[in-house]
Image: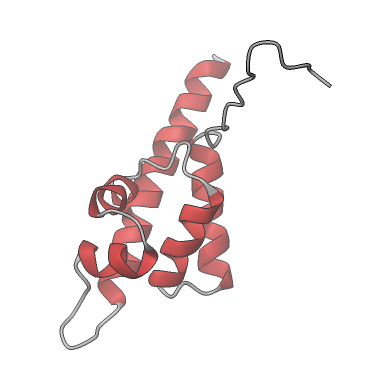
Length: 108
């Protein structure tokens, strides 16, 4: 039962994140309504594919630094930025970097 609840919460987080990011991109109006994903990706320093994944609500494992640059490119205020981070946390934990030890290296 608990697993089903977690999956429902994660699914809702995905849908909310997707709608939120699309709406924030579309509200920025340089010369025409809305920005294209590339116009968000380039100043954020991320790929268009990354922006596409985020707008589809795929926030699982996204690092805080990626969220920061996307939030800046979308000109999110503090409340919007916190909402984005909340949706990312609900989607699942960020990937952790693995540290590889060289053979013969000591642990301490």
